Length: 193
Image (cartoon, rainbow, N blue to C red):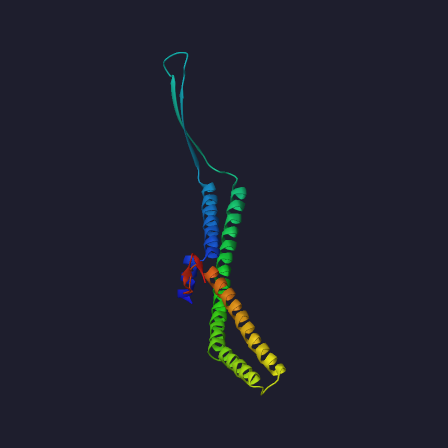
């Protein structure tokens, strides 16, 4: 879990967005606490016309905030926003990790289903269709048996393509959440197949 969380924090765009919002809330909290600090002002004045002595005036002013309840409410509000953003970040991270685990399971299952189709179901349906076709040519079976065998082959192939579609959807959602590519599909003409 910690390794997956660190990878997700490093690559996931959702987590990066929430992390930046949390940093923004932290900075706003820090700025709000500076409202209690005194303000310093440095001034310089130079008279253009008049008597030359005392023509330059330097001054330093310092103001202290006396009405703390307004400042205190701003700091309290900023602290609440920071805490809320921290919980949103944690919640987003946990939900993303859970969704990644779910999609990882779906892709692994989808890969196993595709393997079953490729290694057993499609070859069996293809073999049954070929033998039914040969039997029909030899006049040993009916045309309806040939059609049923062909329909079965098409059903199996359609199931394979549905499973492939679901696998690719799950894989693309997983890669989107992770923020990096985990598939090893070949790239041809700039498009992954």
